[in-house]
Length: 346
Image (cartoon, rainbow, N blue to C red; front, side, top):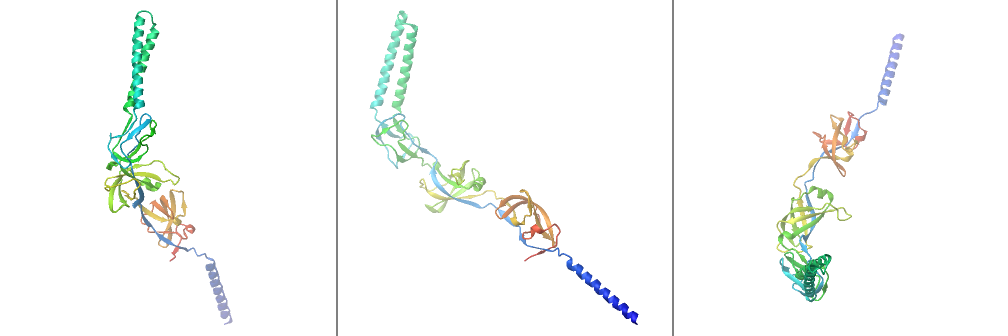
């Protein structure tokens, strides 16, 4: 009986020790479960309408001037007047110019007489061949001088080179005009002359092409929309801001326009770029064009290779790799390995 009790005591002690050892072993076993947070994959489209302020101006301008200098005898139009191409605008006092023409005539006539005498004297062996040749050269020079004087006489008036409106009168009756000095500033006011210019940031500038349709809403005519087209894109930034000029032509326009009128230009991009985006913190490794992220499948982390199309602030536009992926791991992603068990935190 004593032997049986002793055996049972030893057996119970052994079992207790075994259970304690098992408990100690389990207590030192690490818990490999990771807690992570998921974020949904987003949709992106850059086909939004671009809006920018534009300024009205005219692409046709002219500053007619006298070809020669002189005293202005008369100006025939004033600021604000409408003029047509070829209309007489101003004339010079012709006293000096006519005298120059007469002087050139007399010089040409004398040169011809001198040449004729030289020819006669050469035939009589009194003059040399060189003297005859010099006389002939004198005739040619005098003739060209007369042509120049007559040309200046013909261009001693100023005519309108375009149809337009006198924007500014720069010189008046009795003032002295130098050669090439503008007398008027003329603004083209035909329908085809009006344009709208605007400054766009480089990203918006790159999305446009010549011929894209646009809409205008003028502050002076707030309840109406007018149509136009992108007619010209600048290839150089005009100031330190880095913005680029874009010119728009008007297909329809108000009855009355003036330089400096403000309008809102609305440009709807004809082709929208669409794609999928993920938070930038979901990326665990990247070389600029390729990256690695994690998603969760069947309670385990799944490593995915994706292609990067563009960085967009706190999100990344993805070009490939997100087929059938609805959510990506953000918080906790950098601690994961492929296949790790995870628990999604709420």
